Length: 300
Image (cartoon, rainbow, N blue to C red):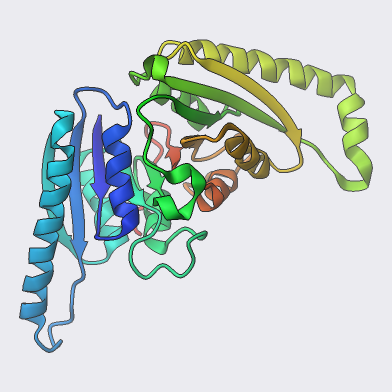
């Protein structure tokens, strides 16, 4: 697995490094540490001295991150690029063949801690690989450093291509006894004019529940290749995103895993509304998984 970690000197970037360091990625993992420098207009006063100072700061920042990851035993490299942050990160992911890009939910200049920052949002939308969005400790109760004991992962599952890709991704990890994975499916109810009552009493709905449980059980068996501690949950509600957020809070999840698009979404290479909402509002880190060959738009 090749992970690209995009960093700056914000607290969320530091949290991202710590999360990656503690998460049970495969032993043969490769890491590219990337920071992006602002590109100043040539007419800017003292442009050269400013660029030189920024380059020196970037070098120190990368060296510190490199040192923190040194204990993992992974192969690491450092890169510096210049230009628009989101665009450069997306391009770097393609260049190094990243399987996963990791980025803090906000860099400097974020206006509100509960709204996803513009750079991380664009990277999540346009990157050709899966994206892990990490918050700093002060941004949510679920964002403290990963514990050395139990690791709680909540994975949304709707039988879509990207949901199955998420199951394959989790199944490939050396989670072991430390991890507890809750696999959940949400069946949406139509609440208008109390249609939910008629809906849940119909034979078709009972068939849908049975099929959803069967699919959950099948996916859970695959996940038990990585850890024996897998449970399933079926919830009914009018909003999938809201139910997943509630479940993540109830489970006190350290990580929420969702597919980039669901069965009902119109893909068109855009991030699905459910995964987008979860990435915006979850207090814990969120992994948005893309299926192999499914990429975002060409430009950020």
